[in-house]
Amino acid sequence: MPAPSDPVVVVGGGLAGLAAAARLAKAGHPVELYERSDTLGGRWAANDLPGIGPVDAAPGILTFPAPWRDLFRKSGRPLEAELSRSGHALVPASPVRYRFADGTVLTLPTDRGAQHATLRAAFGVGPADRWRDLLDELDQVWQILRPLGLEHPLEGRQQLPRPVRARLRARRSLAWLAARLAEPHLEALVRSLACRHGSRPERTPAWVAVDLSISRTFGHWHLAATEPASHPADTGRSSVLVEALTARLQQRRVQVHLRTAVQGLDVVDGRVVGIRTAAGSRTAAAVVVTTDPWHLVEDLLPSGTAPALRRRTQRLRPAAAPTVEHSWMDRPAQTVTETVELTADGTPVVSWARPVGDGTVVSRHDYRRTTPTPSAGAAWRGWRSWLDRPPVTPGVPGLYTAGPASPGGDGPSQVVLSGALASYACHQALD
Image (cartoon, rainbow, N blue to C red):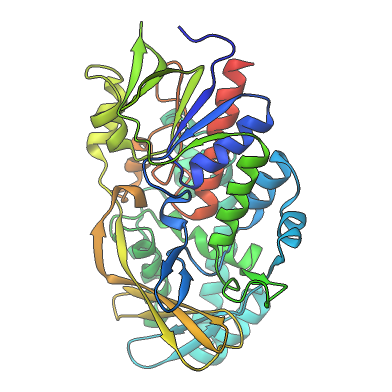
């Protein structure tokens, strides 16, 4: 059985694992993190592209920086101070540019009044009013969603009584919501949100359009190199945050084991008491698993354990991840930009362009060509699939979960929040 001196083991070095490890270490727990690859950050880590330098699969523009700020503040030096120390800053980004199938181009600001004026000029008063009213409604939806998997765990249906489901329009799809706008360009824009979560608009709950409210409320942000001579390739590279978080683990003396796959969890009398690697067993005070739920139930947990979690996971399907491509342009970009090209049915191709030296790196996410990818999270299959996502405490003492398939969602900031929830639950149980 675990001893008081045994560490909390974090399985997986993606965003959720890094966030959980940093918070638990700051809370005074010895922490060991195991990652099977040779880098931390998972899908959001930088990769070196020959002839270009570091490139990201992470979004070049962030819309919800608050979880990052909270993570750094709660684990040590605040984010702004940490970035300043390394020659970086988080700065406002340019508005997103949309290119529609009929050739229409729309640059959509985040300010409420500016949005309405832009849409009125582009599509008329009626569509502009309906868009404004929809986002005002989504502002209220955001307040309902915050305690349901983001700021507090979503553990079961008891947190979704009929009045809450009614306010969320749980039975309505994103496709239905888009059609309410009665304007084909705006319909395509709303439908694209489902694709960006690896799902189909007809199977995605209407409340997922809350992304539009988040964008309008919190704005758009990107990383900037305040010392370009020292960091010529860093402006617009969101993986700078991953690198800052990796440095935070070193400061907190988290033991990181790279190239070390966890092969299974040791369970004694129904409780997780440790992990197994190729080198042998390691006793743990608790285990936080931040890999995908299919890997957890099929490869890590002994057969017969966690039957409820297994049933839930069997009903889930991996999200569809886009094809990611990077290219170089000889002409320099003035700033970081996001361009979304939309087909008539709303399938997006999202491009982030960022200046690098005398040229521009363009990172392209093509949702016309997707692959089901467990590390991308869980696809929506109607609102009830929300309750199939693994809860923070999945019913096995000593085990906690976090990651892109968590109820909070698959965006980088939401994944960071899932790591926070797992760390809180683990700390409370061990305290």
